[in-house]
Amino acid sequence: MGRHERVAALVGDDLAGQAVADLGCGPGRTVRALLAAGPARVHALDRASGLDDDLLADRRVRSRLADLDDGLPLDDGVLDAAVSLNVVEHLASPVDHLVDCHRVLRPGGRLVLAHSDWDTALFTSTDDALTRALVDRFAAAAAGPSTRSDGFMGRKLPALADASAAAGAPWELVAVDVWADPHRRFDDGSVAWKVATAVLAAAADDAALAARAAGWLEDLRALARAGQFLFAVTDVAVVLERR
Ligand SMILES: C[S@@+](CC[C@H](N)C(=O)[O-])C[C@H]1O[C@@H](n2cnc3c(N)ncnc32)[C@H](O)[C@@H]1O
Image (cartoon, rainbow, N blue to C red; front, side, top):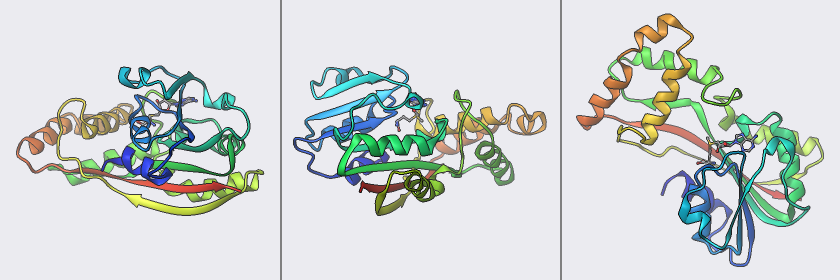
């Protein structure tokens, strides 16, 4: 079971008749996992259009382009559940977003808020010191296409829930779950390759580190070819119920 299936399982294994949402759905891997539990409707929201075609063809899926920083385009109390995976680090105010999530859930409705904690990224390489320096840089820097990121977001989720409660959105903390899935492949486009590419990009404005890292991707690729490579990152999920 991968991270998308784990997140969906935290929502519930029988969602028959329910209205759920994936907030910042990307290509929709969590949407697909949610559909397996039989909901009546999955609202798939993202500011960019990237949902896979098979999901767009599913009558239960309602795709909406929406900037979560502008508020959720959903009426009060319409959702039975919502999920958010690796999105809140990109938002202007994660606390305001959680308050908005609280608004669109019915009383007792469930929010599964999940995030990788990028500071814990683990890559097998032949240069541990270089890999440590790259991951440190990645966790500390604003990385990727977004100008916002937080490499320590996973571990901050319980505090984020508390902060949104203090801002008027009371939750019951049902569970905190933590896992790290193993990835052994390093093909172009693989999960490990995508994260490693982003890690390398974060070093671009440090000339000395970037020069040391010139052969890093090839090092990882060679280890994967030899069957010696491992990538993992700690994922954290908090399961919240709207009071
Ligand atoms: C790292 S991806 C995660 C996608 C998906 N949840 C997954 O785990 O595969 C972050 C997603 O958040 C979306 N996103 C970031 N900021 C957003 C915003 N302000 N409003 C809506 N979507 C946003 C991006 O477009 C992207 O699809």
